[in-house]
Length: 165
Image 1 (cartoon, one colour):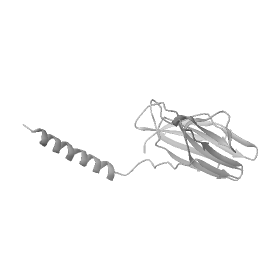
Image 2 (cartoon, rainbow, N blue to C red):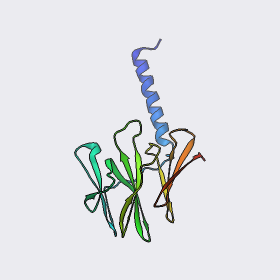
Image 3 (cartoon, rainbow, N blue to C red):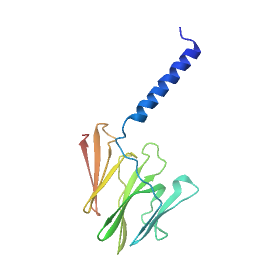
């Protein structure tokens, strides 16, 4: 029969071993960059922080965007195209069931556009750009062995699901 101190020691050893395994396994999903301020040739995209965690606001040239984008916000990725600046915004509204959503913002000489909200509720993302097509990949919330792929062409978001490689 194990004594309390033996069980405690065994628990500490198991915890240390599991921490070592998770610390040495390679990360599949990269850590997303984060910024609150993005100067562009078409205006400055920034996040007006708030003392209330989920009340930060997305702005262009110090004016709230329309439709309003509020929550715990980050400008996670930004891309330059010949005629625009495109930024991906992560939005955490405090909903534990779906902790994060995303929106694309395109700034150009005529102003800005904000995409509809999209995503699979995961902070784990891979983002890429090819020409004027922007892609976000994230684990599927519906099937753990699938990847949700969202593409944005500056006008609409398309969604498809693929198998993991």
